[in-house]
Length: 85
Image (tube, rainbow, N blue to C red):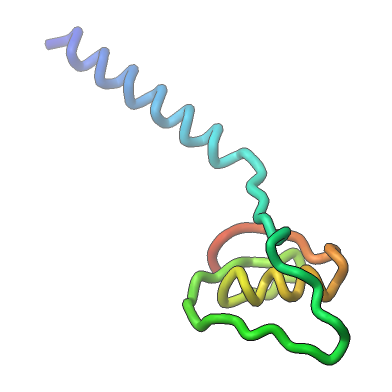
């Protein structure tokens, strides 16, 4: 019984360590498939709500709107995390 409890506790410890390690890794979002539009043109984005928090403190409704703003700012806007700011 003690051996089983020890193994379960050890497994839980390792699982927690690896989850924390993954959470600490800096995630990036790839906007390379979005092209910069000529002045005066607008991008039409879908209306699926999957929020992204940008480095400007604004929440963008989805990746299309976020990447459009990244292209407009010439890459100055950075990805912070998925979800609301």
